[in-house]
Image (cartoon, rainbow, N blue to C red; front, side, top):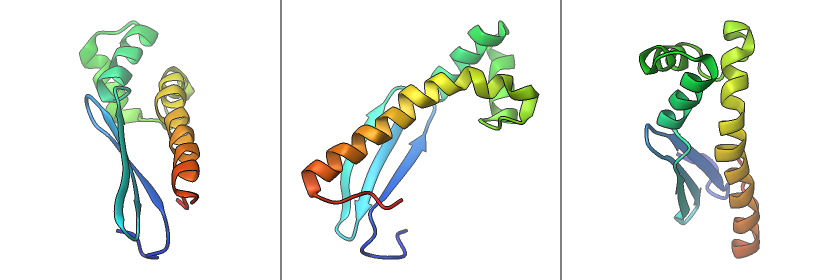
Length: 108
């Protein structure tokens, strides 16, 4: 998983119900955190933002993902808030916490 054993890596798994964040280093899993900003929340945001049924929102989510070039960037803009709050903000908190607790930066 980690090619350079001295590297510290953050792995993010966005599931349907939860997003899991795992920090790994040469000793293995060092930190694990989950939050509820995940696939279901993304679908709900698209339902509201596009004013479409759940099935259509799910289809668009799967086809476009976070690609800003798809659908003239509309999908990306709707999901941007969820990603910033639920994922990017969480990554920053994890980086700060890990540096404070372990005295190490997350390399990737």
